[in-house]
Image (cartoon, rainbow over all chains, first blue to last red; front, side):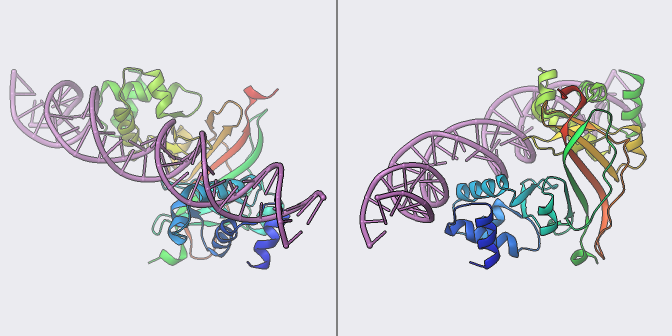
Amino acid sequence: MSARTEQLLKEKKIKITANRILILELLLNSSHSLSIADIEEDLPWADRATIFRTLKTFEDNALLHAIKDNEKSVKYAVCSDACQVDHHKIHPHFHCDVCGNTFCLSEYNFQLPQLPDNYTANKYSLIINGICSNCQK
Amino acid sequence: MSARTEQLLKEKKIKITANRILILELLLNSSHSLSIADIEEDLPWADRATIFRTLKTFEDNALLHAIKDNEKSVKYAVCSDACQVDHHKIHPHFHCDVCGNTFCLSEYNFQLPQLPDNYTANKYSLIINGICSNCQK
DNA sequence: CTCAAGTTTGCAATTAAATTGCATCCACAT
DNA sequence: ATGTGGATGCAATTTAATTGCAAACTTGAG
């Protein structure tokens, strides 16, 4: 287990188990967000329900966030440091329509839109669809 | 059939049928976006598959857009005039965590974020979660 | 080090949404 | 008026998300 993995789990007081270590490290080392199916593929011995509940635990503890891009299934990405500073605020993600990957762009700030009167916002989620650098012809 | 409904369908060269008229008018008259289940409830005699395919037709013709908020099912909203001007660009939506409704805020502009090098964007979808004016205590 | 208490896990089953096949029906251009 | 391609209804299927339960773990107290 890497120091970062251990630190993240202890910080959030999440009990350390083999599944959690492996799932978290998979997410930490991935350049893009992963679906439950993606994780199942990378950890074939792991149970879908366990993955599901592990991700839920991580999400409840603000270790990662769920992203709904244009694919059928929800994807998950670990919060970057920048993102963790203010977990509930800004989540820009880029979904490549060619490779289908979704990348976290939490370091790219944007201007929050003005809301109608009496509306209050807790969380902003921005999905940008397009073509990533790898897929440019 | 209202003049607007007829105009929208003819403009997009979509064959006019009873289902399409009713589904489109339902969406046009709704203050918030609707799921397939919502439409089924409002038009109890209508078939789920027909609603599904009707919405798909509308979406393919840029008459409406699909929104994935935090609920289980996808919702649909007719593009506002402002939105239609540049259909593929900006779609801010507000999802109220109390009543569960999702409102289209296409008239509220925001600043597009800067993208990493060699990324190109086709479409931006912004979901804002919070509390709408009706649900404020 | 050992054990109890509370969590997590694996398996199987369920829920619920999205999607499709196919035969029939309908809108509309001619 | 009519033929044709597209639209519809029904039933079934696919697929993702979610839960129940018993067994296996993790951890803190002794």
